Amino acid sequence: MAAVVELKQSSLRNRLLQALTSDDFALLKPHLEQVALPKGMLLIEPNQLIKHVYFPETAIASVIATNSESRQVEIAIVGREGVVGPSVILGVNRTPHQSFIQMEGTGYRIAASCLTQALEASRSLHGLLLRYIHVLTVQTAATAMSNGDSVLGERLARWLLMCHDRVDGDELALTHEFLSLMLAVRRPGVTEAIHLLEGVGIIRARRAHITIIDRERLEETAGDSYGVPEAEYERLIPKPGASTMPLSGQG
Amino acid sequence: MAAVVELKQSSLRNRLLQALTSDDFALLKPHLEQVALPKGMLLIEPNQLIKHVYFPETAIASVIATNSESRQVEIAIVGREGVVGPSVILGVNRTPHQSFIQMEGTGYRIAASCLTQALEASRSLHGLLLRYIHVLTVQTAATAMSNGDSVLGERLARWLLMCHDRVDGDELALTHEFLSLMLAVRRPGVTEAIHLLEGVGIIRARRAHITIIDRERLEETAGDSYGVPEAEYERLIPKPGASTMPLSGQG
DNA sequence: GTGGCAGCGTATGAAACCGTACAGAGCGGG
DNA sequence: CCCGCTCTGTACGGTTTCATACGCTGCCAC
Image 1 (cartoon, rainbow over the protein chains, first blue to last red):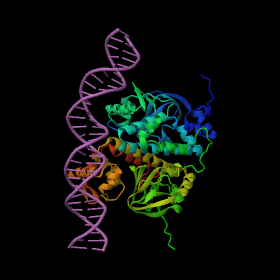
Image 2: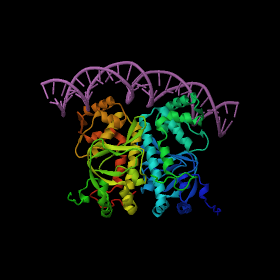
Image 3: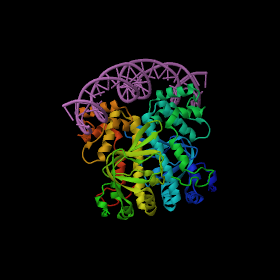
Image 4: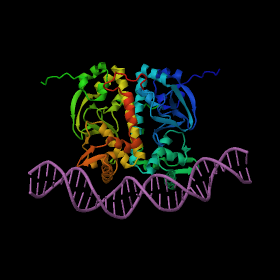
């Protein structure tokens, strides 16, 4: 029925897909499927078979650890820089974690079994995705650190920065309620922290909406809690414009 | 000089090494080197080239995230069930994290380059170690959750349990000071939390020494914060006694 | 056996955050 | 236009943890 539009790697906006060699991209291309990713969509259900792996483009997903009785904490954010369902890359087809769409948009997906086959066929594909897993590990560690050591304002700043990195523009559609879930604090605490940032002109807050005004000072506010995973990403994942392997001794 | 003693897989006490197929073990054997792991030894230095990867046997290592200015938090514990230097398995030869020996003992090590070669030679070896990486990710996530959501007593219980899993017997050589560093809380807080556990007869505390008396109630105290990574490990890593692949559809 | 030190017990005031409750404010639908 | 719902602002008492300080104790070295 529908005209098959040839998928071009250069038109993609997911950085991992961009970073593939053209051979590796050719391997995945037949199985990549563009999908709408509406807010709240469950991409990975805990302890269920993972059917698809997602490469977000404009959407952002959250990875949540849930320990039964309603206690849940966000452990990672994945947007256009990464892939949702990383355990498939590690040869594991279910995980105790949950992933859902936090900011809606679009992306591509691929059947887990197709990806597994492609990983077996191409060492370079597997290598790239494994390096991303490393970065994701560092991000989760930074979350653990932030949760343990930082005051709320700092954690909020970190979270806003991570979101800002994954969208175009300076507008984030977020409610206090949602942030309180992500940061695992109570909602009025978020309200206060937002007021502090707004009071000094770093952000502007409107109903269900936050605008980043001064990113530089937001980074200052986040302090150490922001930056390590981001630097690791830049070190290990080729930039779109650059040659396929920007670092001689990567890793 | 020294008589070369043939290394037998059955005599090893690291569960990953035990779980290798005999072919995979043969691949690693020539490069495995037994080492003493004294307390405080730095196994992995942050942002430095990783020279060796370690398989602890009686020793336990801590993985620490350090964000410059003295803020540091433990993000994972590795003992006889795992491997220190997992980023090598992901094809990355340096990491922002630090690993050091927390409880001294012995273990084996292998040059990072040798391991990398072996990983390229054997898909099943790579697969096993990647599944362990998944488990480690889950452990780090559980740490993030614990740091964010749990009161100190719960976190302490979790930490003691993880240590207990990795030693023989019920004796842990630990100081309050050390625990305060691992849990990223102040030292008197640890003292109080230990008194609570001791007061109800779950542990017995002596100078620089904690004895687990009632593990079952310790698990109750830890609640949800303990158990998820441990279950994931049992699900994905073959047990020593069992056949090589205990689960038909692993992963 | 005694000096010294690492390890532990305890106190105190301050700060961050919690759980809960409730009222005002923006916004869309009938 | 106004109802109703979501979102946000604010308040209150209570708990946990913080930072810091200081004294006691077990243990090793000399």
